Length: 264
Length: 293
Image (cartoon, rainbow over all chains, first blue to last red; front, side, top):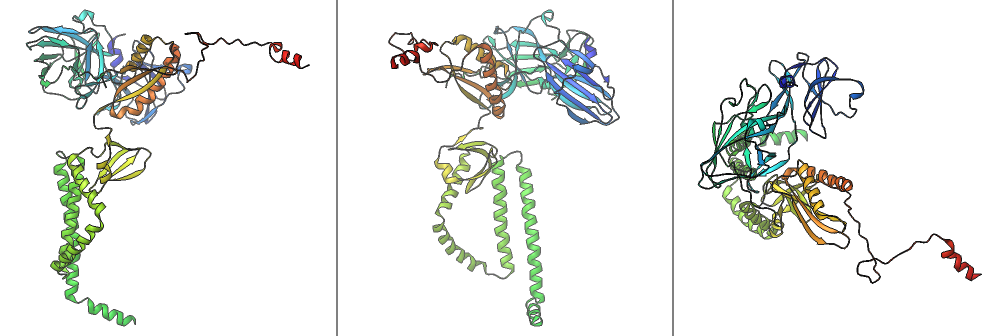
């Protein structure tokens, strides 16, 4: 399936039930003369996305819990927009990585997107946002003053060819530069996804490039967010702006070595 | 009769007294409005800098001080001698002070508590068997709302002298679940299953990692402590979901949660006393009946 099919605006017929699948997320949608009805569910396994389609007869689940939206009669077009999650993501490589002092490393991380359901009109009405994949919560920082994030395990692949092509993930290129005198033990990295935009390419989604300059465990890391679309492929268009546009360079405590909390 | 009352009222409300009365009413209206405006301005100025608790104290301080000043102004306008009143108030104050030792103790405890700041408005606290959300912290008492919507007033003196737990002081907490499994259970398999349950539950924090402690050889079960970290507002979501998930997953994996039972041994080290169930009537009642005959 072509990626553009999933994210393009679609005209809804009146009183017809539609369904669209994104990974584990299933969305049902129906439009009446004035109102829109929306229900969502979860499938047991991750599955290939399938675009908006009509659902009839026996394939309509009986236990759908619809919410009703007063959208008005002037709009009949829906668009699903890929957005970044609403909280930072703590990325943990499946295998711990070590970056020696003075070395740089480029990683590609696939971030599961959130789906923004929009009624297309002059002002664009956002109906809701739903995660394509429900990520586990995690804590970044001290237990008394840290930050609630989502947890994501990643293979942290080094080449673009190794990145799996998935319609419901956005590829985030992260360059880690170790400028500390000691080696960087890359166990987890907090990615402030709320500062990232989403770009659509011919075969996959992308986010801005990130550059993290590590200056020591007790020091704040310098995070630089790329201004433009990442330069790994051509023909990218911005489909969703960052939730919180940030300055290009941020000083953040990005790497963390959590204290052991396994004792009493 | 009516004419005489009317005459007395007319005599009382001389133009001078009416003028004073109008002035008093105007002063009260302006004074109350001034207190409210001052409270609003202070609230807006301190909104970003002070906690809800301190803001409430400042609001109350302005209201009470303003009301007392307004009262003195009104009494002065009505011709009451303030100095005599203050003298009398001093004597009355001493008498009230003796009579209200508990209140004074609460008041002083309240001042200590405000400076110590063990909790804030909106925190969940536990004292003894009482658990609830702090609604207000006053000089004499703390008011809390329990989760079944009851309003409880706890005197400050009692709070200061008792062990108090502020449940929501830190952003993350741990839910401790005590589990008992049958002695035949493969412990490594059990630990893996528990890790998978924690990993699959979105409310359970990935880090700090879940705690799995083999805590005891119990009477009827191997006892484990399963500690799950969660964000402080997710307590009910986590508890409801994870308890159900443990039961369902244990059933699927064939992990038995035993109920208390007792095994009798006849002397051998590990073999239980052999019991043979015989379903032959001649072996039980039949033979005895024969003998009876």
